[in-house]
Length: 279
Ligand SMILES: Nc1ncnc2c1ncn2[C@@H]1O[C@H](COP(=O)(O)OP(=O)(O)OP(=O)(O)O)[C@@H](O)[C@H]1O
Image (cartoon, rainbow, N blue to C red; front, side):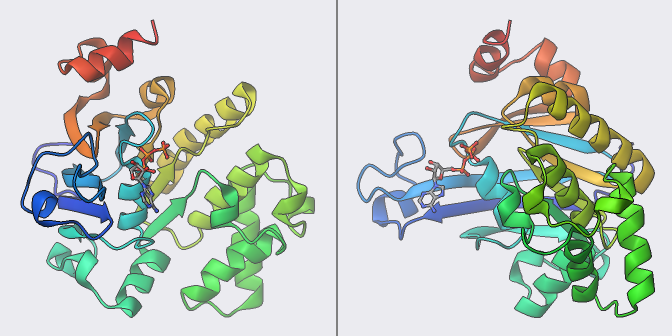
């Protein structure tokens, strides 16, 4: 990344609330962590802004409930934003806010520009389809129709995530957690997205399986020249993969910088606590 480079994804003022809000919280009144003391509306993300540059991995770290998943779901249009804007450099010259596009355009962005891998593979895969069929589903959604071409692409992608060709016709429900995550990653890559959203993809996996998935993410970044937004509550994962990192607390970004800088010399007391809890 260089300072002159244009960001691939630019997010400004992303705010998401669960609940209707009331004059107190909508008017900017004090919250109890992320919750309005008057109406109990949860402000899961508040004025979140950042840039993701071409080819980089941007880590997002924070404790449970800090708003990481909500941010990812909003970026992938799974959940509507309350306020905010986001721009993709390769969508309409980076000039149009993707949050305010119509459904068809949002579908286009999901199918061509962004890929998402959820912590729970059930959300990203059809467990009863074959693994190749899962990839084909994504290819068909982006307009592919030719059987052989889709089979070849599925084979290539499954190979890239180290699923053996003889297992491509098996459904993910037959696979281990680590394999399901790898199929989910291959499906997310089906249409060569420029941006990959990874939400706690190694959480819940055994350490040795985790290491394999982490290696795979590194390899994918190189091979597919993709930019990755990587959410994890695990600082070891962030240290291993992320070039830069943002730290979230109660729905807000409280610290940002180069990953080494954040982990070796944290400035905010919460980040210091987070880092020291690991030592
Ligand atoms: N559907 C929902 N309705 C109400 N509140 C919600 C909903 N989903 C999330 N929240 C709340 O929003 C806040 C942010 O949750 P979110 O899942 O985004 O955090 P997170 O950092 O991803 O946590 P985790 O790592 O545990 O998934 C939390 O206070 C959570 O309880």
